[in-house]
Amino acid sequence: MNILFTASECYPFAKVGGLADVVYALSKSLAKLGHNVKVVIPRYYIIDRSTLEHVPGVLIANIGGKDYYAGVFKSHLPNSDVEIYFIDYELFFGRKSIYTDENGKGYVDNGKRFTFFSIASLMLTKIINFNPDIIHANDWHTASQCALIKTRFRDDFKDTRCVLTIHNLQHQGMFDKSLMELLGIGWEHFNSFEFEALGCVNLLKGGIKFADAVTTVSPKYAKEIQTLEFGFGLHEHIRAYAYKLYGILNGVDYEVWNPKIDKYIAKNYDLDDLSGKKECKGNLQGVFGLEIRDDIPIIGFIGRFVKQKGTELIATVIYRLLDLPLQMVFLGSGEKWTEELFSKVNSTHQNLKVFIGYNDELAHKIEAGSDLFLMPSLFEPCGLNQIYSLRYGTLPIVRAVGGLDDTVENFDPYTKSGWGFKFYDATPEALFNTVKWALETWLYDKEAIEVMIKRAMSKTFNWNESAKQYEKVYECAFR
Image (tube, rainbow, N blue to C red; front, side):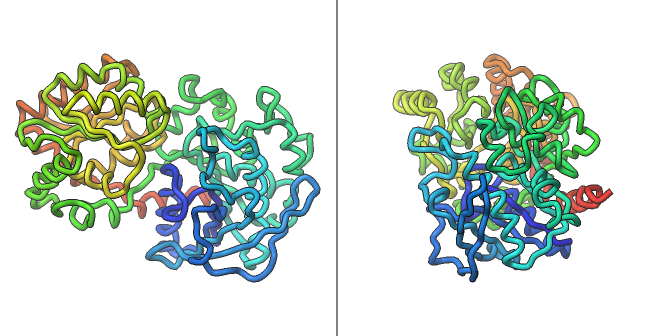
Protein backbone atom coordinates (compact mmCIF):
# COMPACT_ATOMS: atom_id res chain seq x y z
CA MET A 1 0.00 0.00 0.00
CA ASN A 2 0.90 3.65 -0.39
CA ILE A 3 0.62 5.07 3.13
CA LEU A 4 0.84 8.75 4.08
CA PHE A 5 1.41 9.52 7.76
CA THR A 6 0.29 13.02 8.74
CA ALA A 7 1.20 14.22 12.22
CA SER A 8 2.28 17.24 14.23
CA GLU A 9 5.42 15.48 15.50
CA CYS A 10 7.94 12.89 14.39
CA TYR A 11 11.12 11.81 16.16
CA PRO A 12 13.89 12.94 15.92
CA PHE A 13 12.87 16.15 14.13
CA ALA A 14 10.15 17.40 16.46
CA LYS A 15 9.09 15.71 19.70
CA VAL A 16 6.91 16.71 22.62
CA GLY A 17 5.46 13.35 23.58
CA GLY A 18 4.94 9.75 22.58
CA LEU A 19 3.20 10.70 19.33
CA ALA A 20 6.59 11.50 17.79
CA ASP A 21 7.97 8.08 18.74
CA VAL A 22 4.96 6.23 17.35
CA VAL A 23 5.01 7.99 13.96
CA TYR A 24 8.74 7.36 13.64
CA ALA A 25 8.74 3.70 14.65
CA LEU A 26 5.45 2.59 13.08
CA SER A 27 6.21 4.15 9.69
CA LYS A 28 9.61 2.42 9.63
CA SER A 29 8.08 -0.92 10.61
CA LEU A 30 5.40 -0.70 7.93
CA ALA A 31 8.08 0.09 5.35
CA LYS A 32 9.96 -3.06 6.42
CA LEU A 33 6.79 -5.02 5.71
CA GLY A 34 6.93 -3.80 2.11
CA HIS A 35 4.67 -0.76 2.11
CA ASN A 36 5.52 2.57 0.47
CA VAL A 37 5.38 4.93 3.44
CA LYS A 38 5.84 8.69 3.55
CA VAL A 39 5.56 11.01 6.55
CA VAL A 40 4.67 14.70 6.60
CA ILE A 41 4.98 17.16 9.50
CA PRO A 42 5.31 20.95 9.75
CA ARG A 43 8.76 22.51 9.39
CA TYR A 44 9.07 24.10 12.80
CA TYR A 45 11.64 26.72 13.75
CA ILE A 46 13.62 24.05 15.61
CA ILE A 47 14.15 22.06 12.39
CA ASP A 48 17.15 23.47 10.53
CA ARG A 49 16.32 23.94 6.84
CA SER A 50 19.98 23.65 5.89
CA THR A 51 19.88 19.96 6.84
CA LEU A 52 16.94 19.28 4.52
CA GLU A 53 16.52 18.88 0.78
CA HIS A 54 14.32 21.48 -0.93
CA VAL A 55 11.46 20.11 -3.03
CA PRO A 56 10.94 22.16 -6.22
CA GLY A 57 7.66 23.94 -6.76
CA VAL A 58 5.20 25.83 -4.61
CA LEU A 59 2.49 24.23 -2.52
CA ILE A 60 -0.82 26.10 -2.51
CA ALA A 61 -3.33 25.45 0.25
CA ASN A 62 -6.66 27.26 0.25
CA ILE A 63 -8.18 27.89 3.65
CA GLY A 64 -11.15 30.19 4.13
CA GLY A 65 -11.12 31.15 0.45
CA LYS A 66 -7.54 32.42 0.62
CA ASP A 67 -4.53 30.81 -1.01
CA TYR A 68 -1.50 30.21 1.18
CA TYR A 69 1.81 29.52 -0.56
CA ALA A 70 4.18 27.18 1.26
CA GLY A 71 7.55 25.60 0.66
CA VAL A 72 8.33 21.91 0.95
CA PHE A 73 11.48 20.18 2.19
CA LYS A 74 12.29 16.54 2.65
CA SER A 75 14.65 14.16 4.40
CA HIS A 76 14.66 10.53 5.52
CA LEU A 77 13.91 8.96 8.87
CA PRO A 78 17.19 7.85 10.46
CA ASN A 79 18.33 4.35 9.48
CA SER A 80 15.59 3.92 6.89
CA ASP A 81 14.47 4.74 3.36
CA VAL A 82 11.24 6.34 4.61
CA GLU A 83 10.89 9.86 3.21
CA ILE A 84 9.68 12.58 5.54
CA TYR A 85 8.33 15.85 4.14
CA PHE A 86 8.13 19.20 5.87
CA ILE A 87 5.53 21.87 5.14
CA ASP A 88 7.32 25.22 5.45
CA TYR A 89 5.18 28.24 6.32
CA GLU A 90 6.91 30.68 8.61
CA LEU A 91 3.79 32.50 9.86
CA PHE A 92 2.33 29.35 11.37
CA PHE A 93 5.35 27.24 12.24
CA GLY A 94 8.31 29.58 12.64
CA ARG A 95 8.05 29.52 16.42
CA LYS A 96 10.24 28.16 19.18
CA SER A 97 7.57 25.89 20.61
CA ILE A 98 5.31 23.48 18.74
CA TYR A 99 2.00 24.02 20.54
CA THR A 100 2.35 26.62 23.29
CA ASP A 101 3.59 30.14 23.94
CA GLU A 102 6.18 31.15 26.54
CA ASN A 103 3.49 30.97 29.26
CA GLY A 104 2.64 27.39 28.43
CA LYS A 105 -0.73 28.27 26.88
CA GLY A 106 -1.80 26.93 23.50
CA TYR A 107 -1.29 29.34 20.61
CA VAL A 108 -4.54 31.18 19.93
CA ASP A 109 -4.31 30.27 16.24
CA ASN A 110 -3.67 26.55 16.73
CA GLY A 111 -6.93 25.72 14.97
CA LYS A 112 -5.93 27.70 11.91
CA ARG A 113 -2.33 26.43 12.01
CA PHE A 114 -3.28 22.77 11.89
CA THR A 115 -6.21 23.24 9.53
CA PHE A 116 -3.69 24.75 7.14
CA PHE A 117 -1.31 21.86 7.75
CA SER A 118 -4.03 19.25 7.23
CA ILE A 119 -5.02 20.75 3.88
CA ALA A 120 -1.42 21.40 2.85
CA SER A 121 -0.54 17.75 3.55
CA LEU A 122 -3.23 16.67 1.10
CA MET A 123 -1.95 19.11 -1.50
CA LEU A 124 1.55 17.75 -1.01
CA THR A 125 0.50 14.44 -2.57
CA LYS A 126 -0.01 16.25 -5.89
CA ILE A 127 3.41 17.88 -5.81
CA ILE A 128 5.27 14.65 -5.11
CA ASN A 129 2.95 12.56 -7.32
CA PHE A 130 1.98 10.23 -4.50
CA ASN A 131 -1.43 8.55 -4.56
CA PRO A 132 -2.09 7.25 -1.05
CA ASP A 133 -4.20 4.20 -0.45
CA ILE A 134 -4.20 5.10 3.24
CA ILE A 135 -3.92 8.47 4.93
CA HIS A 136 -3.00 7.77 8.53
CA ALA A 137 -4.00 10.83 10.57
CA ASN A 138 -2.93 11.28 14.17
CA ASP A 139 -4.83 13.06 16.95
CA TRP A 140 -6.85 16.23 16.45
CA HIS A 141 -4.10 18.03 14.54
CA THR A 142 -4.85 16.10 11.32
CA ALA A 143 -8.19 14.45 12.19
CA SER A 144 -10.04 16.81 9.84
CA GLN A 145 -8.43 15.04 6.87
CA CYS A 146 -10.85 12.16 7.42
CA ALA A 147 -13.67 14.58 6.57
CA LEU A 148 -11.78 16.58 3.94
CA ILE A 149 -11.18 13.57 1.69
CA LYS A 150 -14.86 12.60 1.94
CA THR A 151 -16.22 16.08 1.22
CA ARG A 152 -14.20 18.95 -0.18
CA PHE A 153 -11.51 16.79 -1.82
CA ARG A 154 -13.53 13.64 -2.52
CA ASP A 155 -12.84 13.73 -6.26
CA ASP A 156 -9.07 13.78 -5.62
CA PHE A 157 -9.07 11.00 -3.03
CA LYS A 158 -11.97 8.77 -4.09
CA ASP A 159 -9.79 5.65 -3.79
CA THR A 160 -8.17 6.69 -0.50
CA ARG A 161 -9.15 5.58 2.98
CA CYS A 162 -8.42 7.46 6.20
CA VAL A 163 -7.36 5.84 9.46
CA LEU A 164 -7.30 8.01 12.59
CA THR A 165 -5.22 7.15 15.65
CA ILE A 166 -6.18 8.66 19.01
CA HIS A 167 -3.03 9.00 21.11
CA ASN A 168 -4.65 11.05 23.88
CA LEU A 169 -8.38 11.77 23.98
CA GLN A 170 -7.93 14.59 26.48
CA HIS A 171 -6.78 16.84 23.63
CA GLN A 172 -9.57 17.13 21.07
CA GLY A 173 -8.98 20.33 19.09
CA MET A 174 -11.84 22.49 20.34
CA PHE A 175 -12.05 25.87 18.56
CA ASP A 176 -14.50 28.62 17.66
CA LYS A 177 -17.12 27.54 15.13
CA SER A 178 -15.67 30.00 12.60
CA LEU A 179 -13.09 27.29 11.92
CA MET A 180 -15.74 25.66 9.70
CA GLU A 181 -15.14 28.44 7.20
CA LEU A 182 -11.44 27.61 7.09
CA LEU A 183 -12.11 23.90 6.64
CA GLY A 184 -14.40 24.68 3.73
CA ILE A 185 -16.43 21.48 4.04
CA GLY A 186 -19.84 23.14 4.45
CA TRP A 187 -21.82 24.25 7.46
CA GLU A 188 -24.13 21.25 7.12
CA HIS A 189 -21.39 19.29 8.90
CA PHE A 190 -21.58 21.55 11.95
CA ASN A 191 -23.98 19.38 13.91
CA SER A 192 -23.88 17.32 17.10
CA PHE A 193 -23.25 14.10 15.19
CA GLU A 194 -20.19 15.45 13.38
CA PHE A 195 -18.08 18.52 14.26
CA GLU A 196 -20.21 20.47 16.76
CA ALA A 197 -19.61 20.21 20.50
CA LEU A 198 -20.78 22.78 23.05
CA GLY A 199 -21.20 25.32 20.28
CA CYS A 200 -17.60 24.88 19.13
CA VAL A 201 -15.81 22.89 16.46
CA ASN A 202 -14.35 19.66 17.79
CA LEU A 203 -11.86 18.42 15.21
CA LEU A 204 -11.31 15.02 16.79
CA LYS A 205 -15.04 14.39 17.05
CA GLY A 206 -15.50 15.08 13.35
CA GLY A 207 -12.51 12.94 12.48
CA ILE A 208 -13.91 9.98 14.40
CA LYS A 209 -17.17 10.25 12.50
CA PHE A 210 -15.60 10.38 9.03
CA ALA A 211 -12.65 8.00 9.55
CA ASP A 212 -12.85 4.60 7.88
CA ALA A 213 -11.17 3.14 10.96
CA VAL A 214 -10.17 4.52 14.35
CA THR A 215 -7.38 3.13 16.49
CA THR A 216 -6.08 3.77 19.97
CA VAL A 217 -2.63 2.91 21.29
CA SER A 218 -3.64 0.05 23.59
CA PRO A 219 -6.54 -2.42 23.78
CA LYS A 220 -7.71 -1.32 27.22
CA TYR A 221 -7.69 2.36 26.25
CA ALA A 222 -10.05 1.53 23.36
CA LYS A 223 -12.50 0.24 25.97
CA GLU A 224 -11.87 3.02 28.50
CA ILE A 225 -12.63 5.91 26.12
CA GLN A 226 -16.15 4.54 25.73
CA THR A 227 -16.81 5.24 29.42
CA LEU A 228 -17.76 8.41 31.28
CA GLU A 229 -14.57 8.34 33.39
CA PHE A 230 -12.12 8.29 30.49
CA GLY A 231 -14.21 9.59 27.56
CA PHE A 232 -13.74 13.34 28.15
CA GLY A 233 -17.26 14.01 26.93
CA LEU A 234 -16.94 11.93 23.76
CA HIS A 235 -17.70 8.50 25.21
CA GLU A 236 -21.17 8.24 23.68
CA HIS A 237 -19.91 9.50 20.31
CA ILE A 238 -17.09 6.95 20.35
CA ARG A 239 -19.43 4.19 21.48
CA ALA A 240 -21.57 4.87 18.40
CA TYR A 241 -18.56 4.07 16.22
CA ALA A 242 -17.20 1.19 18.27
CA TYR A 243 -17.64 -1.09 15.23
CA LYS A 244 -14.64 0.58 13.59
CA LEU A 245 -12.54 1.08 16.74
CA TYR A 246 -9.40 -0.98 17.31
CA GLY A 247 -6.91 -1.00 20.20
CA ILE A 248 -3.33 -1.73 19.12
CA LEU A 249 -0.57 -1.60 21.67
CA ASN A 250 2.38 0.61 20.81
CA GLY A 251 5.68 -1.11 20.29
CA VAL A 252 9.14 -0.09 21.40
CA ASP A 253 12.23 0.58 19.33
CA TYR A 254 14.68 -1.86 20.89
CA GLU A 255 17.45 -0.43 18.73
CA VAL A 256 17.23 2.63 21.00
CA TRP A 257 15.95 1.23 24.31
CA ASN A 258 18.08 -1.81 25.00
CA PRO A 259 20.58 -2.12 27.88
CA LYS A 260 22.69 -4.50 25.81
CA ILE A 261 23.63 -1.77 23.31
CA ASP A 262 22.65 1.47 25.09
CA LYS A 263 25.39 4.05 24.51
CA TYR A 264 24.29 6.29 27.38
CA ILE A 265 24.57 3.91 30.33
CA ALA A 266 27.64 3.19 32.47
CA LYS A 267 27.86 -0.48 31.54
CA ASN A 268 25.86 -2.60 29.15
CA TYR A 269 24.03 -5.65 30.42
CA ASP A 270 21.35 -8.10 29.36
CA LEU A 271 19.21 -10.95 30.59
CA ASP A 272 22.14 -13.38 30.64
CA ASP A 273 24.46 -11.07 32.57
CA LEU A 274 22.92 -8.52 34.93
CA SER A 275 26.18 -7.46 36.58
CA GLY A 276 26.20 -4.18 34.66
CA LYS A 277 22.96 -3.01 36.26
CA LYS A 278 24.65 -2.58 39.62
CA GLU A 279 27.27 -0.35 38.02
CA CYS A 280 24.52 1.64 36.29
CA LYS A 281 22.86 2.19 39.67
CA GLY A 282 26.06 3.55 41.18
CA ASN A 283 26.57 5.77 38.14
CA LEU A 284 23.03 7.14 38.45
CA GLN A 285 23.57 7.91 42.13
CA GLY A 286 26.82 9.67 41.30
CA VAL A 287 25.33 11.73 38.45
CA PHE A 288 22.48 12.97 40.67
CA GLY A 289 24.54 13.39 43.83
CA LEU A 290 22.81 10.65 45.78
CA GLU A 291 24.56 8.61 48.44
CA ILE A 292 26.12 5.51 46.85
CA ARG A 293 24.17 2.65 48.39
CA ASP A 294 23.30 -0.87 47.28
CA ASP A 295 21.04 -1.70 50.21
CA ILE A 296 18.08 0.51 49.29
CA PRO A 297 16.22 0.85 45.98
CA ILE A 298 16.10 3.82 43.63
CA ILE A 299 12.65 4.70 42.28
CA GLY A 300 12.72 6.57 38.98
CA PHE A 301 10.12 8.87 37.44
CA ILE A 302 10.27 10.31 33.93
CA GLY A 303 7.39 12.33 32.55
CA ARG A 304 5.48 15.55 32.34
CA PHE A 305 4.64 17.15 35.67
CA VAL A 306 0.92 17.31 34.97
CA LYS A 307 -2.19 15.93 36.61
CA GLN A 308 -2.58 13.14 34.05
CA LYS A 309 0.75 11.62 35.08
CA GLY A 310 -0.31 11.38 38.73
CA THR A 311 2.00 14.10 40.00
CA GLU A 312 -0.71 15.39 42.34
CA LEU A 313 -0.88 11.94 43.93
CA ILE A 314 2.89 11.90 44.33
CA ALA A 315 2.97 15.44 45.73
CA THR A 316 0.39 14.57 48.39
CA VAL A 317 2.53 11.77 49.85
CA ILE A 318 6.04 12.86 48.82
CA TYR A 319 7.22 13.53 52.40
CA ARG A 320 5.87 10.18 53.60
CA LEU A 321 7.60 8.41 50.72
CA LEU A 322 10.91 10.05 51.53
CA ASP A 323 10.69 8.80 55.11
CA LEU A 324 10.99 5.27 53.72
CA PRO A 325 14.38 3.62 53.08
CA LEU A 326 14.60 4.54 49.40
CA GLN A 327 15.98 7.06 46.93
CA MET A 328 14.00 8.83 44.21
CA VAL A 329 15.03 10.46 40.93
CA PHE A 330 12.63 12.63 38.92
CA LEU A 331 13.12 13.87 35.36
CA GLY A 332 10.48 16.10 33.82
CA SER A 333 8.79 19.47 33.60
CA GLY A 334 5.28 20.87 33.46
CA GLU A 335 3.01 22.75 35.81
CA LYS A 336 4.91 25.42 37.73
CA TRP A 337 3.58 24.49 41.17
CA THR A 338 4.80 20.92 40.66
CA GLU A 339 8.23 22.02 39.49
CA GLU A 340 8.52 24.36 42.46
CA LEU A 341 7.33 21.77 44.99
CA PHE A 342 9.65 19.02 43.79
CA SER A 343 12.55 21.48 43.59
CA LYS A 344 11.86 22.59 47.16
CA VAL A 345 11.77 19.00 48.42
CA ASN A 346 14.94 18.32 46.45
CA SER A 347 16.67 21.08 48.44
CA THR A 348 15.56 19.74 51.83
CA HIS A 349 15.83 15.97 51.36
CA GLN A 350 18.99 14.11 50.45
CA ASN A 351 17.16 11.09 49.02
CA LEU A 352 15.24 12.94 46.27
CA LYS A 353 16.92 14.48 43.23
CA VAL A 354 15.01 16.35 40.53
CA PHE A 355 16.04 17.47 37.05
CA ILE A 356 13.62 20.03 35.60
CA GLY A 357 13.42 19.59 31.84
CA TYR A 358 14.19 16.67 29.59
CA ASN A 359 17.52 15.05 28.82
CA ASP A 360 17.67 11.92 26.69
CA GLU A 361 20.91 10.67 28.22
CA LEU A 362 19.57 11.07 31.75
CA ALA A 363 16.38 9.24 30.75
CA HIS A 364 18.44 6.23 29.69
CA LYS A 365 20.52 6.38 32.87
CA ILE A 366 17.37 6.47 35.02
CA GLU A 367 15.86 3.47 33.24
CA ALA A 368 19.09 1.47 33.68
CA GLY A 369 20.09 2.62 37.16
CA SER A 370 16.73 2.54 38.93
CA ASP A 371 15.40 -0.53 40.69
CA LEU A 372 11.74 0.49 40.45
CA PHE A 373 9.91 2.87 38.10
CA LEU A 374 6.85 4.89 39.13
CA MET A 375 3.95 5.66 36.75
CA PRO A 376 0.83 6.54 38.78
CA SER A 377 -1.12 7.97 35.82
CA LEU A 378 -4.76 8.97 36.16
CA PHE A 379 -5.11 7.71 32.60
CA GLU A 380 -2.50 6.39 30.20
CA PRO A 381 -3.41 5.62 26.57
CA CYS A 382 -0.35 3.39 26.23
CA GLY A 383 2.73 4.57 28.04
CA LEU A 384 6.24 3.73 26.89
CA ASN A 385 8.44 4.17 29.94
CA GLN A 386 6.96 1.16 31.70
CA ILE A 387 7.87 -0.92 28.62
CA TYR A 388 11.37 0.55 28.55
CA SER A 389 11.64 -0.29 32.26
CA LEU A 390 10.78 -3.93 31.65
CA ARG A 391 13.62 -4.32 29.17
CA TYR A 392 16.04 -2.63 31.60
CA GLY A 393 15.02 -4.90 34.50
CA THR A 394 13.49 -1.96 36.37
CA LEU A 395 10.21 -3.15 37.86
CA PRO A 396 7.28 -0.77 37.22
CA ILE A 397 4.86 0.53 39.84
CA VAL A 398 1.77 1.61 37.91
CA ARG A 399 -1.89 2.47 38.17
CA ALA A 400 -3.87 -0.18 36.32
CA VAL A 401 -5.18 1.96 33.45
CA GLY A 402 -4.82 1.84 29.67
CA GLY A 403 -1.56 0.49 28.34
CA LEU A 404 -0.11 0.26 31.85
CA ASP A 405 -2.63 -2.44 32.68
CA ASP A 406 -2.07 -4.15 29.32
CA THR A 407 1.70 -4.40 29.72
CA VAL A 408 2.24 -5.00 33.46
CA GLU A 409 1.17 -8.14 35.28
CA ASN A 410 0.75 -7.65 39.02
CA PHE A 411 3.11 -9.46 41.38
CA ASP A 412 1.49 -12.30 43.29
CA PRO A 413 3.43 -12.92 46.53
CA TYR A 414 2.03 -16.45 46.83
CA THR A 415 2.76 -17.78 43.31
CA LYS A 416 5.64 -15.33 42.68
CA SER A 417 4.11 -14.57 39.26
CA GLY A 418 3.99 -11.15 37.62
CA TRP A 419 6.56 -8.51 36.79
CA GLY A 420 5.38 -5.30 38.44
CA PHE A 421 3.20 -3.69 41.08
CA LYS A 422 -0.26 -2.25 40.32
CA PHE A 423 -2.87 -0.22 42.15
CA TYR A 424 -6.37 0.68 41.04
CA ASP A 425 -7.75 3.64 42.98
CA ALA A 426 -6.51 7.08 41.96
CA THR A 427 -5.73 8.06 45.54
CA PRO A 428 -2.53 9.11 47.33
CA GLU A 429 -3.05 6.31 49.86
CA ALA A 430 -3.24 3.64 47.16
CA LEU A 431 -0.05 4.98 45.60
CA PHE A 432 1.78 5.12 48.93
CA ASN A 433 0.73 1.61 49.94
CA THR A 434 1.80 0.15 46.60
CA VAL A 435 5.20 1.83 46.74
CA LYS A 436 5.62 0.52 50.27
CA TRP A 437 4.62 -2.97 49.10
CA ALA A 438 7.17 -2.83 46.26
CA LEU A 439 9.82 -1.51 48.64
CA GLU A 440 9.24 -4.26 51.20
CA THR A 441 9.34 -6.90 48.47
CA TRP A 442 12.64 -5.46 47.21
CA LEU A 443 14.13 -5.39 50.72
CA TYR A 444 12.90 -8.72 52.07
CA ASP A 445 12.18 -11.03 49.12
CA LYS A 446 15.28 -10.84 46.92
CA GLU A 447 14.51 -14.15 45.27
CA ALA A 448 11.12 -12.91 44.03
CA ILE A 449 12.68 -9.66 42.77
CA GLU A 450 15.34 -11.56 40.81
CA VAL A 451 12.73 -13.79 39.20
CA MET A 452 10.56 -10.78 38.30
CA ILE A 453 13.50 -8.92 36.79
CA LYS A 454 14.34 -11.81 34.49
CA ARG A 455 10.68 -12.26 33.61
CA ALA A 456 10.33 -8.55 32.84
CA MET A 457 13.42 -8.45 30.66
CA SER A 458 12.17 -11.40 28.61
CA LYS A 459 9.01 -9.52 27.59
CA THR A 460 8.99 -8.03 24.10
CA PHE A 461 6.70 -5.37 22.68
CA ASN A 462 8.18 -4.82 19.24
CA TRP A 463 6.79 -2.69 16.44
CA ASN A 464 6.80 -5.50 13.92
CA GLU A 465 3.83 -7.17 15.60
CA SER A 466 2.00 -3.85 16.02
CA ALA A 467 2.60 -3.00 12.35
CA LYS A 468 1.01 -6.28 11.28
CA GLN A 469 -2.09 -5.36 13.28
CA TYR A 470 -2.20 -1.96 11.55
CA GLU A 471 -2.02 -3.78 8.21
CA LYS A 472 -5.22 -5.60 9.14
CA VAL A 473 -6.88 -2.31 10.13
CA TYR A 474 -5.93 -0.80 6.77
CA GLU A 475 -7.53 -3.77 5.04
CA CYS A 476 -10.66 -3.32 7.15
CA ALA A 477 -10.82 0.33 6.11
CA PHE A 478 -11.53 -0.77 2.53
CA ARG A 479 -14.47 -3.01 3.43
